[in-house]
Length: 167
Image 1 (tube, rainbow, N blue to C red):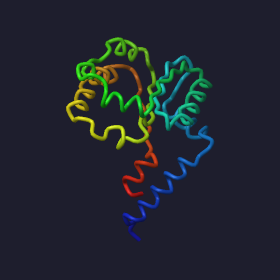
Image 2: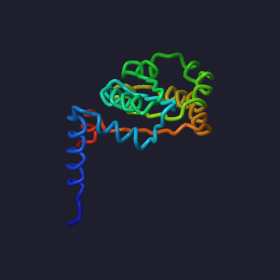
Image 3: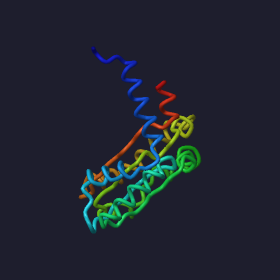
Image 4: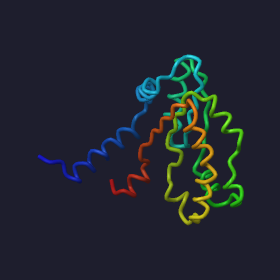
C-alpha cells in the first residue's frame, strides 16, 4: 500500500504530539550531544527560544557532563517581535563585529527553534525590515561558514505551526 498524504499527516501529528508530550528530554538531549561529537574542553553554545527551554536545559546539562564549556543564548517571542517591528531600520542593518570574534572560539553551536509563533511575530512586518535583518546577520553567517564551528539546527513544529499546516 502506498502512503497517502493523510497517512503522512497522521504520522507527523503523532510525532509532534509525542515530542510535545515528552516530559524527560534527557534521551533526546543525549542523542543531540552525541551526534554533535561534543568533547571535553570544547566551547558550546545552545541558542533557544522560550518554548524550547526544557530541551535547552537538558542539552546544556548533557554538554556539561561531557566536560564542555556551555553557554546559553536565549530569546523570546516578544524580543523577536520587537526586532521585526520596533528597532530602527538603520540598526537592523548593523552587525556587531565582536560576535564574529566570538564565533572563532566556538566549537559547537546547537540552535533550537527560536520562535514559537512566527505567524504572530512577523505578521505585518515590512518586507524591507525583514531583508534588513537578514543583511545585518550576513556577517554572522559568513563568520560561521569561515570558522571551525560545527553548527546543528534542531527544529520541530510548534502547536501553532502544526495548526497552520492543518496537521
